[in-house]
Image (cartoon, rainbow, N blue to C red; front, side, top):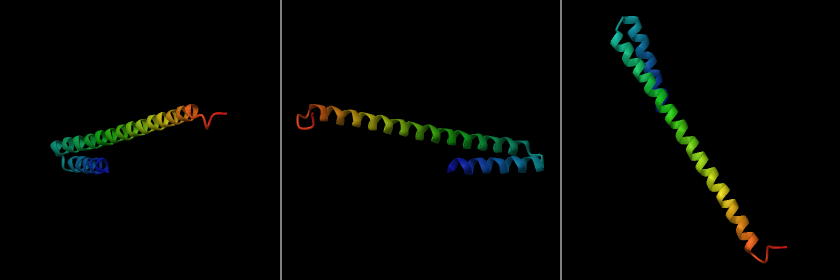
Length: 77
């Protein structure tokens, strides 16, 4: 969520800088916008990593369950 605020703040500063001719404000706005994009990318990477870890855990749990079933004489046919 913070990335959206940084992007919006950056855009506003850039527009303000263009309207007033303040190049420093424009540059500050661009930096804020890039900061927001970086935050968004980082959050996406964190989410993808969490999903991958959960998927690996689920696969491992299922493999362990199958192995336990195969070793249990009551579940064998």
